[in-house]
Length: 274
Image 1: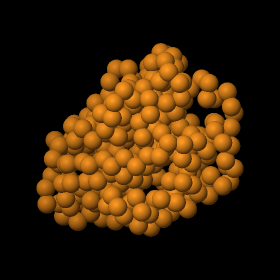
Image 2: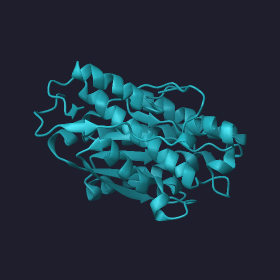
Image 3: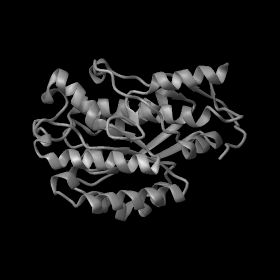
Image 4: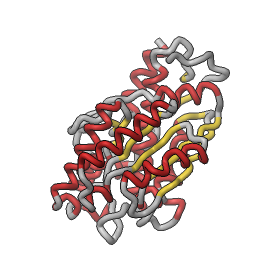
């Protein structure tokens, strides 16, 4: 009954994580402690009125890490959204906000979110430094915000796809879960049809690799259809503003919590308790 309750809670927690088709998304050792969960907070301005498809991708390697110790390190790698361009201060970036969001939802776990963003970087740049960044951060989870600059520069979709696939394969081979975050939405951005081709390619690769994709693009499209670009984007109509980063962090936190509950649901020694 307890595990059924958390299965239901996992469904309720998710806002927009997807295992990524275009349009939606080993046994743990005995636990030395149990973990309380609370719904990850979603601000009213981050909840679209439309119904968005929801599903879960288990974060099994992360669940195993949480099962063994209460301190977890997350590597956030990517480009300007990871740097936080457009935010009013470092504390308003998604990297800064993710840590307290997770700690508020996962009682008893200390999270350290390490931001390693480089403005203007394409996917290949992050892939080239992935091994070093993972080693230096001692990451238990990788959050990879990817695709925007590849779309701007019309990087070959085949080259982009192969870069994602090979990097995700390396992460999996090294017992690391990864959460992909696709590009931001803006009315000006989608005037170039190549932009959405990159979004679709990320969804395709994530589905094939069975990794979690947080669908920032379609969530922002729904929200901005209700409120308009200026509510979530900075004055350059490209980078997120403080509200946009808050929504990004909240969406990601719910996805991670849901992925942990999905991974934990079928284990004989669950770590979650009411």
